[in-house]
Length: 182
Image (tube, rainbow, N blue to C red; front, side, top):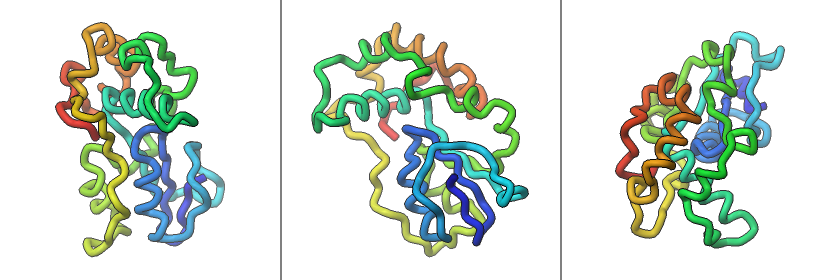
């Protein structure tokens, strides 16, 4: 569990939401164990603030594709992004955050969005204005492509359908694929 007793917060760090960066940025604010993607509140964390990482579903899916194809290969798989989306099922690794959290969503006090990560981190009461963050490692690079160039209509519709709860809950526009990667 990502828990900091010094500042009384719990970090819910979902996969493909810049979780490692957020964890690294907050870890030196107090001692925390190794990064985990688990959610929940342990008995010794009752009453603590919950910080939750989120990301636009369109760029989250691109991040999943990049990560899946890079694991163990150090290169992209020849499989296209649109094929990856066609085959994707949230059951094997990237469930919607809103569905994963369910009723626990109301426990979240602070959201850290990949798209506004440093601003959101600075809004946390235990992060001073002078705090320096680790090197930016959360922005993806797709060698000259933009997110809109990688999506076709079918892939966009599938992501929109699979992650409709995340679009609604976190205020992302399901009709707009971001122009840049976050």
